[in-house]
Amino acid sequence: MNRRAVLAAVSSVALAGCTTGFGSTRRVEVVQKFVRVTDHREDGRYVFDVADRQYWNAIDGPWYSGEVHDLLESEVGDGKPLVVTDATARALERRFAEVRYGVRTCTAVRTDGSRRCRAAWIARDDFNGIEVGDVVILQFDDERARVTSVVQRRRYRD
Image 1: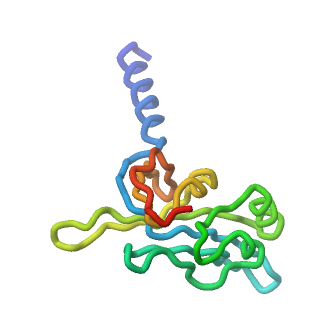
Image 2: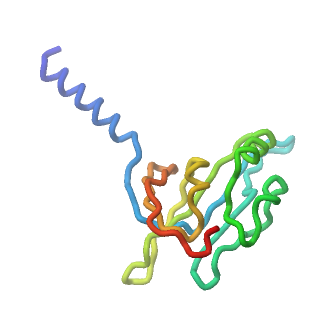
């Protein structure tokens, strides 16, 4: 193999490695946080949210949608943010086959009144560090994201 072919191959591999990391970075508002679990039962696989906290505007403020699972009940409430402690995370992991932490985020309102929204899975530490209504910088990679900074926290945050 000649030198140019080797350099071209190495460059291609290096570039491919760069594209596998986190991609686009966006300033977004967190409008939903949820803990989603997978439960395997005799009659099939069930995927459901054990806690779902939402925020759509400053007037209504944040709220919990649906019922909160027993394992999280003592930690969350109407006035409390959705945070999963180490002990609760361990209990969820013992009880369910899979536990994932998700957020739904939206861009600022555009001039035509629309917003772009998307959901992503994030690490529990990032999940616990933000609350619905916060404005954050997220770095997205397909279905995953990570928080790079919190730009603005909402006034109701504990």
